[in-house]
Length: 549
Image 1 (spheres, rainbow, N blue to C red):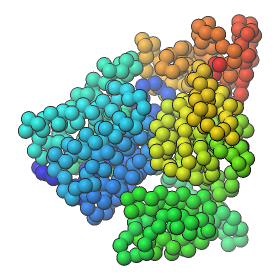
Image 2 (spheres, rainbow, N blue to C red):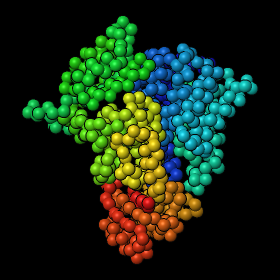
Image 3 (cartoon, one colour):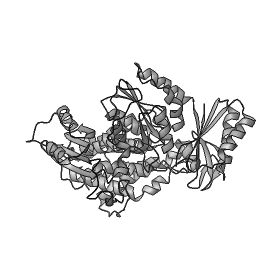
Image 4 (cartoon, rainbow, N blue to C red):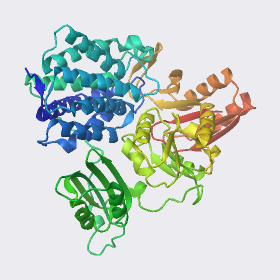
């Protein structure tokens, strides 16, 4: 039994919790409500927590330092909605513990409460029956048991939390009809349960199976891309975390940034809790390190030759961005695009920066911030264009202080496509303009057509792996063996219910060549007052996206 935790206990609790989640990551991913190929809740939560823990591994620091560092790491590295909510829970939890050298049961219970509050505050419209409910009810149960004198040790806290978390998780289908229809529990809540199960295993001294996990950053590097005759065009991508230390030069953040500005490009710096995270493209990393070493010691350090890694860095190359609004632009646009062709179209329509949204993992808060650094404007309008990207974008807006960030509530590329032409890059009142953009986006009805990655039951309809299905919000419009047929049924379902002036069909990479003529023929024969257009996007996730305006 442990009556209080110090820095090493805290580190071990995180280690066991994260490794236990890694062991069950695919199980959590499989709990995705719809059988779409983006069931990545477990992956996003794992990457988020690993981003906070990795810099701490092997550290002998005390609880205050470790808690602060973990808090900052999970916030900047949060990916996906599940990752953002988890990051905010652990931020509130860890920020409170950073006031203690040793934290007993009462402090940990209060830390859990702070974590719950922080998580709820991060979501504009909290939905019960999700991870939020799991952590809230589990925390309330621990508090109630503590008031009865039943919680005396750290072991008691974790055991009571887990007991109620499992109960609540099993009840989530009764709180959310969409979960009950699919016959699953909430995936984010399940992920949190696995984290706390790992913590309990540490407290009990139980062994934890080693899990080998793949990482998005792990890749085979072709070092033949640079030899003795190569021209050194791009310099080095240099990244590190610097711990400011006593006895070294006095640190002035603004002066520090100014000093770095003459030493490279694509500079991103984050300063929090006496730690500085730096990303810079430079031809002389030794000079950058020399300057920074005068202020403290390096916690992490990575230097990569960008000629060798050029394919990884094209999206963040140091070339200056020519703003659509010109040199005097007051507004810039950042848009997430699913598919290379869609990204190119967004750039043509007015987006200043496009972030790929169809990679293996959704963009993190830090990914957004790196793009903001390229834009010297008063206001940046962000189109996240996905249900699983919005919270990371919102988190980035709270972390970035050099410009006003307005995150639009767009859940698909189709909404951005409708709103982008209305952007006024010289707008004096950006917030009013953003309201008009949101109105245009909300006027779009979007239907997503994808191929099922697993068997599922939804609203009494059986969906088999390999079937095509059409979703409008969370309403199932059609299911079938042929994507063209499903698309036509979905179009008829929408247009028979409401009149729409425009239908735009966004074709993914796996869409058939025959869908164009079938759509045009259907519209011409049955809905002549609706204008139809079909365009390629390069989207690898959805076969087709139907947009009705």
